[in-house]
Each structure stands twice: as C-alpha cells, then as structure tokens.
Image 1: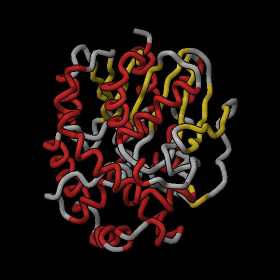
Image 2: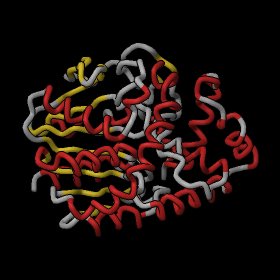
Image 3: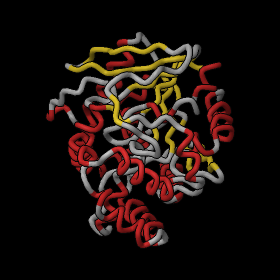
Image 4: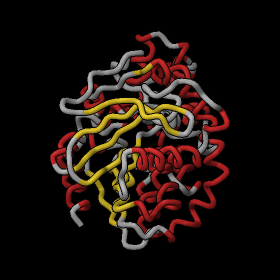
Length: 327
C-alpha cells in the first residue's frame, strides 16, 4: 500500500519507509503487464492528453464522479469493487496517473509535478466533454484533488477528501510517530523484515517477499488486516518500474507548494466532504484541520477502519458519500 511521501526527517528510517507504503502494495499483489479484467459493465481505454496516454475505467450513469488514487505512483484498482455500488446513481471515472498502472509508462521527468497532474485531470474532464464534475481523492490523491479545487473550482460540484495526506507538516510528524509506534508493536522478526527486505526497491523484491512486506504493511494500515486480502492489488509493470521515480519527483513538487496550499484552504468554496478512518495512522487532527479551514465542509469519521475505509467499512462509506452527493 505504498503512497504517502517521506514527509518528515524526524522519523526513523523505518517510519520514513512506511510513509511511502500506504496505497500500492498489499497482500497477494503480483506483478502484471496486462490489464486486470475490468469491473462488469465498465468501459476502459487509453485517453491521449498532454503528451501522454492515461488508462481509464468508467462505469455507471448519472452525474460524473472522478476518483483519484493514492501513491504517488500507483493505480486505481484498489477502489473496486468497493465503490461499484455508487455506479447505480453516478458515472464513476477512475484513471491511472501518468507513468504508472496501465497508463503510458514513458516518463517525461519534467512533467511529474502536482501542477501537471492537475492539468492531466482537467484535460480528462475536457476530453470526456464534462462541464462540471464531482471529485474524490484518497490519500495522496486528496492532495491532487485539493490542488485541482484551488485552481478549477468553477468546474467542481463536490469535493471529497478521504484520509488525505496532511497538508500541514505538524500532522505529518504525528503520523510518522504513530507509524513508528505500530512498528514497535510488531515482533522483532517482523521489524527486522521491514528494516531489511522491505526497505529494498520494489523491483528487487521477489513475489514472495513482496507478499510478506504487504502483509506486514496491512497490519499497520488496516483496523482488520484480513480485509486487505479481499481486494485486487495488482502490481503492474509500469508501477514496479516507475513508482519510486514518480514518488520522489512528486514529493519534491509537493514540498514546494505545500505552504501555499495550506494558506489557500479558506478559498475553497465548493461543497466538501472529509472522510477519516478512526484507525488511520494519519491523525484525525489533520482531517479536523481541513474541516476547520474549508468553510461549510462536513467531516465524517468511519469507525473500525484504517487508511482504506471504503474497503473496511464499505456500507458506512457509501452511505456517507450518497448523503453528501445528494446535497
């Protein structure tokens, strides 16, 4: 479950590693270079935009809802089938951000930035002929969603931030401390595995080693780690090849704009829902801060769930989104 960045130099090396493991690796993930069978009734394809091609999957009918995956440097597949019930009333759009998943694997290094990822989303909106969209970002995807809202509010109906990466560095430090506490609660052998095998590059891990690291990671990120094994967590070839480069470049980009994003939060006027799993290592105070800074926003706490509330408590999560989107 690789995803959040190395956000604090105060963390130990183990905690820093785990900050980057929130959304890509997971139990039973195996490398693949071919498309995973799409969700029934979905439409998939490659959309050419901004000098690259992004892989997308859409399903359902109704008002459009774009969903941004975490990472940076992962794919969208972990959202399904958990979010599929929303397709009864909404047209869901998922896509793999540039360079990873099943999108074009060629990396133009100068294009790996928050600004470019925002422009990629805007280009997709235009390509699909949509005047306004609702937008959900999970984990790292929450920062892309927020950056999009700050620039393109006129094209947003609703904004949904789910266990979003902290926009304020204070909460990043607390996150690292919580992760370190959870690591220390593991067995000595598990801690050794995290510090050695799991500290290596994804491309250097065997399938068995990857599965073991993902199993350990699930114990840190899920209220019920067994639920991680119920989800499709593919490791596409592009993700294995490019995720670490994408992550490093995007983290650098985020560090340059983080302060500005933080100070601009009060300018967000679009209806906003902030969702937080009560066991997430990201502190609740981070989501409360977003709630305080974004006028009129709604904060929903999902019980007995960690960083992936739509996986651990799908009924609670879907009900919260339906109620909000009907506003």
